Length: 113
Figure (tube, rainbow, N blue to C red):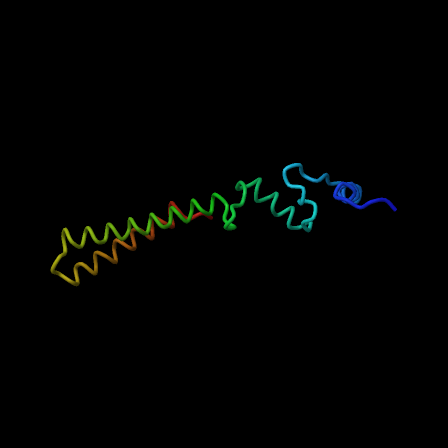
């Protein structure tokens, strides 16, 4: 028997699986095949997955949702202070209406199928 090193392991795995080790990630063939395929699909569809486990599309969606909720809160506070300072029931009714409009807009235009 000869010496056992990384090159020997790479050559043996290439013969058995038909997959060359990636030049940018020499450990890619050591992942189970299912995980490798899922990772390739994620990179192909959405881009590289970040260190926190979220890809670029998920981070953009979270940012959009946070900004949307902040906009909702800003509109409610502005309408309350500008038009309905001292009338409780009218203010409550208008706030519920604003929330319903924002929810309808979200489901119509922003939610991904």
